[in-house]
Length: 411
Image 1 (cartoon, helix red, strand yellow):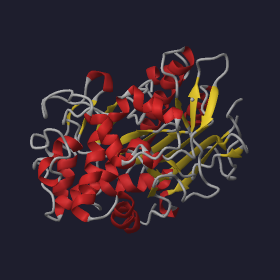
Image 2 (cartoon, rainbow, N blue to C red):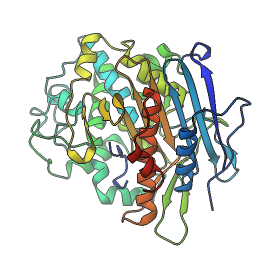
Image 3 (cartoon, helix red, strand yellow):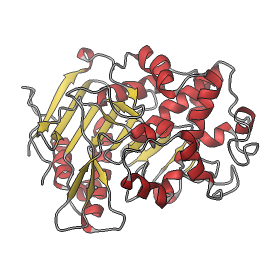
Image 4 (cartoon, helix red, strand yellow):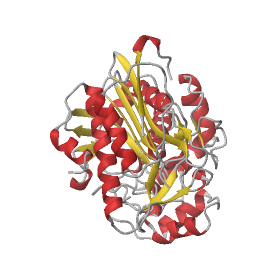
């Protein structure tokens, strides 16, 4: 296995907690390692090369990271984008960004607040009467910051089992909501916190009701086009706007004597993730989105303050808070803002500093398909989490703590 880290001067580059899961498997199915494309430039940070090496050793077919420390951009890529053909991963490939989509969806909602078309503290029942149980007791803000108490449809084991039985079924928005609303609320609205993809499916319905447009059109017209994001779009329902530069995603199972890989790249992501997690992007464009958001280019300063007003996270989610589609992560190397994203075949993170000047985006081109703990799955989670922290520390220019390096190396 080889890795390639390319340092690019900032001025030369054009604009562009636990896992936040789309599956119910919170642990969340031959070798995927391969050579990265050589760019003819000196290798960069040794610790990023080591992070890439350990992620591949843990079973991932590919790993890519883009780190902008406000002076230059370093792109690290390792492994393959496609296990069947052996095509190397380049660090510029499109990939499923999963729940990083929620930040896009929240931006679209806050743009409506800026336009006077939506009120954060109004009940969702005002805009979608009869759609959400107890809709008059749940506000738009509660949906955006996961304090609504609504059961997450991806936590229904029958839902995930159904996807595995018929992976090409395209779920309607109503089908997803029906799954969620078969379950009782987890708590009274506003009294606790629980991450729920259902909240953002409802927000997607709200956006369509107010604007008359679907999420794909809204993302393109109000975010991607203004920012010049040419490779960022909603899978509706599949990832069709991809060419050769597309990172396949794999579900891995470590339950047997050898890892088993399932290529899920042709499955209809938009048909079960929707406004909660169906966007396709690239490391560079996802970085540009988060940097633009935190530097005030997408919503007003007032709405950005609302977005960054957080509620505490449970202890098992680590240190930080959750705002309106935006997380505050108090990492060992400093506080950053961003989100994470898990699909059936990708595990990614996107973080930036409070001023948007520094950013880090990472993607592991695999996710766990195991439903019960095992050594391979535990190691995969441990390495993926440690690699995220390494990238954050590199972005902030801070030394990686020894306990993080120990975790990365199997301690």
